Length: 471
Image (tube, rainbow, N blue to C red; front, side, top):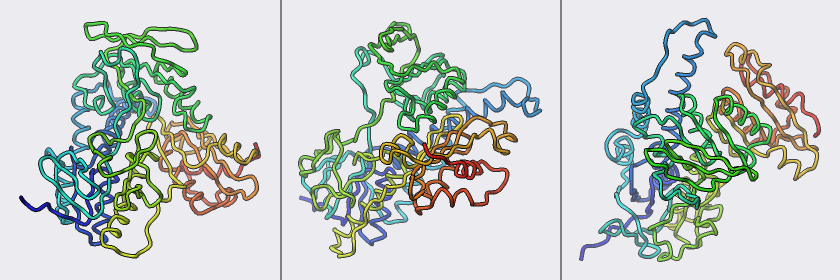
């Protein structure tokens, strides 16, 4: 019988958390084996963040061309080729991952790092040994970074139609004339924006009272206004009662909104109702790993599970499901796994996710960090709130992009910044100034006195901070 190959650290999954864990473990001079069931890089560069932003960029260019006359530019008839947009999307993915079946760029990086890579599905035999296909691998420490999978709600009739997941929607061969999107979170809103911009009829169904319901209420209302401005048929407090296969490539969705029933006929149904930790097939019970109520792997701030030599990071650990938090958690998990494997007494790293900005790439962008006004008022009753209308900015006038709002929330006594929220052009960039203020414990008064270059969108930060009042 052949000897089982052994490593200091075994990392399962090569997405943001897994790749970061590999880099961190190698930085501790640990020997590392990486196991990947699909394409290297995981979901974000292959099927999610990257391709979706490429599609949105192409759609926005088309929209800008349609409105070129507003800037005095004459372009004649403007059109697009859906297959060429999809080719652009793939070229962007390939630029980040490399071409080839596995992602040649990642393969090259891993080879330069002297990391062993095994392709196949991983399954625990015990807390040190993992099966990968027909072979086994053992390691002193293990990092689980298997990400998440789409949550499919139990809607009657849904299993009888060929519905799309978000990854499927970004690989369509033909533009649908009409699409229903179930779920009004970031993924649903971004894909609704893409399809609406290129002329597809979009029906967006959200069960919560607001789209982007985790955002500040004022921002959520603006987001709805912007989406409806793209002629998206948007329903909140909506329950999909049934999905019906009408035959001939037509699906019908029976929808209930406060007792009012309606039927919507579309060519495609896209389900974007959230994610769940991906542990299927891992046989975590064989290693004694404890799962939470939603199937996530429970971890502490060191990203350690209840099993001393096993760590988990990213979506599978059930926290904030962002690529940037997965990177952070992966580095913590990889470092600590290596320290355990090599029996080093160094102080263990701990995840710190007190300040995590996020961005949703609708048109214009939505970005936020920290507490919403409602959350801050629940904690402190009265808080300082400052607002700046994006339309008042010189840059918004020159760009003819006058829609939006920036909002800052601060502590009533210390006046330290607690949260920032924006819908407007470059919101994803501007929000980091407020995130830094929170990170450094800066007051709203410090923000109000910082000189900003003119004309920029960041000037909204000064305006909002300078006009803050108690609410």
